Length: 152
Image (cartoon, rainbow, N blue to C red; front, side, top):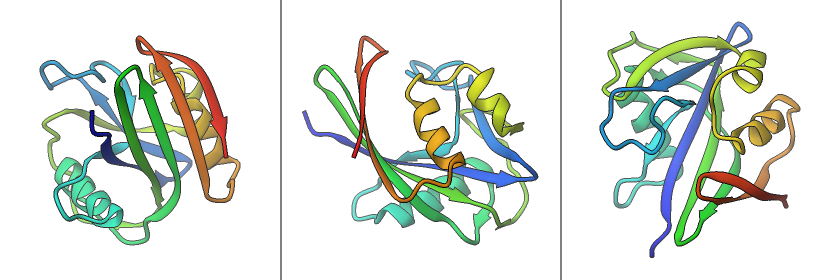
């Protein structure tokens, strides 16, 4: 099975991240979880192009200074994904309705400690908060439960 290629952006403002509460998509493996903004590559896109497009499509915003912070490799049985993780602090535009859920500014600590997110997300969100240098993180799941992780 071919691995999936995705981007995820954590847009920051006033000590908060713009989060997407995934509630609207049918058969969504992320249903009712909170995520940053992102999605799948389109054919021929670079990670940066995918990141900009996904943020624009899901929020209506145009990022001004996205920074590639790391790559996360996910696996769960035969499923594999490579996710390019970005942060951004400046943007232009007006919010639009998101077809995948509700967009909300959430305090960074609350994201990691209180919201329902993937268990492995807490690891790379900690790396982002610690201002870690560019990272490569491998998260291994079994039936949607984190069983191991490794930071390169």
